[in-house]
Image 1 (tube, helix red, strand yellow):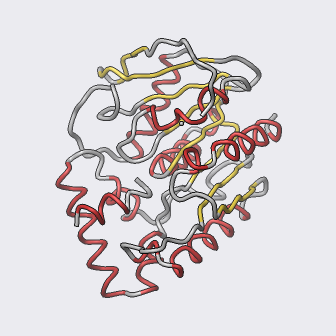
Image 2 (cartoon, helix red, strand yellow):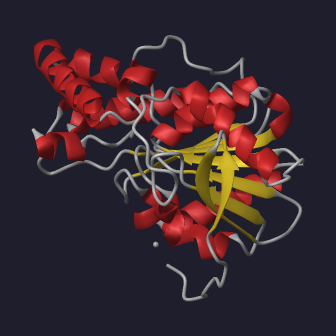
Length: 270
């Protein structure tokens, strides 16, 4: 079961140039938050990692990205080098703390929010809740409320067992209860709750040789691609990139592609 849980944390680095920026910490809600802020330019990018990941999840693209904009990456409370606490957070709380982080760092201009996996749900909540603080959105392998729908449509009895196991493990870990968070909420912030801003979605449709859960079967991959194709295209300024060359971490497997799409998003943003 542990293998299944580790594999399914899909919701949940590549240049030679060194970055000589020292990691810093700032207080948010009384807790120390680890962050790094480097670069300059017209735009400010906020990087949101997935699941229980910290800011190091962006290592593969960070050094390249700071050549194009001011870039902020951080570890949410409980993750990375930030304050280590155990609490069942909601995405609404995480989004509110992301805003507090920006205020603590004296970032007044709207940001381009780039988020991976579960972080993408936080970014969706942020975009809907704080429209004045965001001007573009990139979601990489984004967690979706429809993850469970895909599994259930393939094999309902097996899906219910796998979903129950994931929920039990999530509650046992005590931190974030992320699957209960976005699986249990309908609808999530979405078009048209999110303002008319440039949106890019990167989703993997790469097939697994030995899928451990329904979500990674060939049918699951096909449905995942269709889901995000339709979702991204619903936005007036939405774009979709479906990749068959990487799994859940395109920033690891295809860093050049992710950088290219990010630069494209920068160019689409006023």
